[in-house]
Length: 364
Image (cartoon, rainbow, N blue to C red; front, side, top):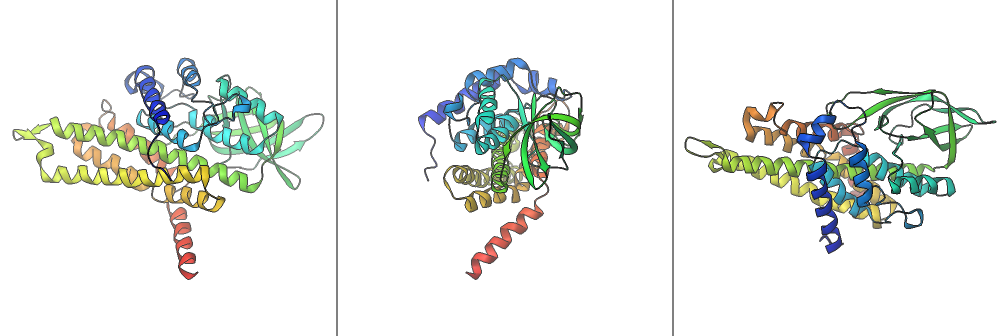
């Protein structure tokens, strides 16, 4: 496994970083959209599509770049560092990975729209909820409710897992349907938009059957790329705190010269770099490892997610009281990291799974 970025990957990273700094800065873009349910603007989404970011994981046959999860992780890290609030992860990763595993002509058509940037698609694979097929002819009709659907207000289409007799199918539902209701569920992180989606007699297009192992693999991919996003946020707030420690003076000298502050900065750096190794391995596993290692790498990334949230907490200690103020960005980074800790449930279940795997391995 080569941990070094290629020249192409470095160019991808720098291009996305420059685009976000110029077109979606925290001061002029992110803060303006904190209370906006869509979390995005047409101009920025169009810009990401023009860069190829929306079609990064879309197969070349469907008009995408056909790149790897490692490449997606590079983009996600930059989006996390910029606190990007839009629907990139739910569309370009969650929906794309589910549709790619599904295959078929209908899925390919949706993938082509995602790659072109003409459609925003979100998926409810993290919480299948209680959705059922209540009619099959002349049209498929769905009824049910799903919690914690990301970016539903920005989406044109929601991918829904629904029960149909003894089968679970993947269905595409247009958000413009009058029977679909989207309600914002406020969480600690205002840069992440999650919604409760109610389907009351909604027309749907059946795309096919998504097997259980494909659902699990898609959830794992989302967890891994979310971890890369959190890594970017932690790296950015750590860098801000260290620069502050170099320039902020107390008692006639920079606060970074005080041993207590130095220890805090070292703690942040150690946490970020340890997390980086786990994220890099998980991204590699998503591309090249077997299903078992892929899943375990995602579980590990989530099990130790709270450590990245600690970076935001420590950074605010370095900033002092100003870090909590509305004018400063540090508290937004802390909220982004706390949101990652809560995403998909707390760490306990994931730690238990990691522990069970280690115990089983020890017995072999």
